[in-house]
Image (cartoon, rainbow, N blue to C red; front, side, top):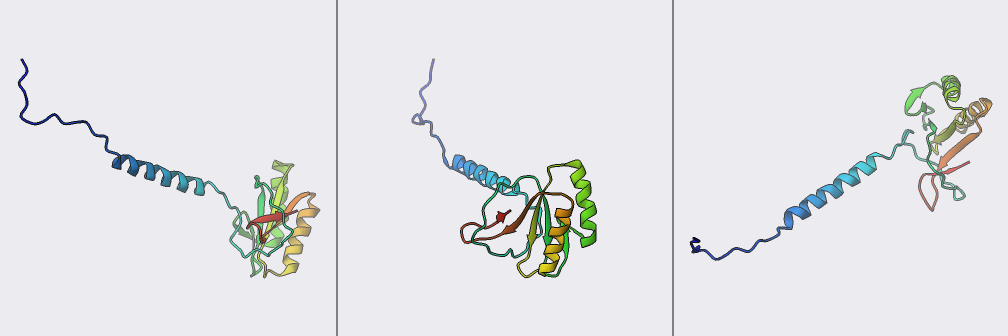
Amino acid sequence: MRIPSQQGRRRARIEIIPLIDIMFFLLATFVMVSLSMVKNQGVSVHLPKASTGQSQQRTTSVTITVTDAGRVYLNRELMKADEVPSRLKALKRKNDDLKVLINADETAYFGDVVKILDQVRQLGIEKLAIQTTGAKAAGQTTE
């Protein structure tokens, strides 16, 4: 036997505020994770501008950075310019199709950049690019 309740029958409600909170949390998480997946191997420098630069796919490559103070970095590791060829030789032995990206500050001494460029070419590395910025898109590279 059923006893009637004094309270009126409550209708079921769907609360959407917690759902909205969860969706914003997931959206923020995915944005943060996707931003952290972008891998920049070079040291932050002010790149020179080039209006004729062409965007290229960023594939696995070695980044050589020359700062305005003349410091040379190989994938964010500070080293002397004389050590670069021996490190590149070792990397070329592991990967015959080695790609090198030169990332130099726009106020860097031109002679330092040319010296690095010459060392890379003497090793027989043909896939070489110089990173620039342009009016169209930042981070363009020209080959």
